[in-house]
Image (cartoon, rainbow, N blue to C red; front, side, top):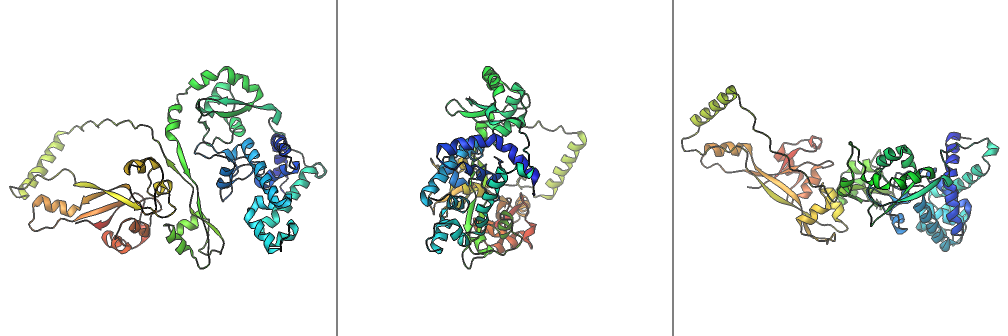
Length: 488
């Protein structure tokens, strides 16, 4: 038998998770053998994540999880919570059973979605049997139910194949829960109760950043071994007050709350190419290849492509402390003499009535705008311009997050700077010299010439190339400041 080591580790994990699975499957009056589905889905790894974003023991996608009250934030993902995700999986499979009345069809729908199963039933002439509709199902689903049956066999007859479980560090009946009423970090709990951080993390996989963002009005559950419960209860007040020198996180947690923009997908239609899809979603072909791990530009009709990856935006910031102004640098006698000589030389060259040159190049700021496309959200626009939802709301006097297609939003500011040549001309007051003022743009990660030109009305790729002497798009670097148009 292949992968004996993995199978024996899964058998050990089953001693922790299966009693809980069986309890809830029995409560919903469902076959207890469905517990083996979690092995097919995740090999009993609560933090498993598929290439398309399905997460947890039961591999919930974001949308399906949300339908069953599994919440996702930057700090907590309920899909990774063993108890909550198990209840959601039971509810989901129960709903599918009401539709099909057959558990093998339920498994097929769990894997590929009810839409694909319904389509296969229609193509088979209305058959309601997995084996009869199997040829019309997606390739992965055709092998999914047989894989489930194989796992049933292996777990039921492991001893006959000389498979022995790796003994877990603790069992299901040795785990209990406590209610957390204030912000705690795993390191605080570990230091105060002398529990390894890895153990806390294993028992509480839903907390993605090792932080429990609880408040008195929004409590969270912490799982610990029963032998540690009394220590937590007796030292609860000290735990909330405890701070190590290396971390003072309680005040910072609420300030670092973020919102997750989920990945966006596109189903390839007949006649579409990567270039066409890239233009539609204002990204590059290379972006699409990277997000979808494509080696070439070949795509298939019906293929599901990521066109906007999952991103996280900051929605609240801790108050930044103003930096003290730097002390003036002491000037040596030699430096002072050098500066005096330069001033005298300039005075000798410039006309007597010329104004004193400015210490810095004149700069003024202009608002940068974005026209809202159909289906866009504040979160997606914030991610596109490397800003936050709160900042967009402030700039546009928005009270909520609702925006209308066609609306013109301020998304930031662009510096307008006089060219260096013009600054020199002004200093020497050359007659009949026309001022040239450029509009500048700072290149962001993932920018292309086409994307930059599209953000500035009336600007073409050729304009940007000409103004900046760009011959190859690979010359663009994040942080680079380029001219996008002539203002005057």
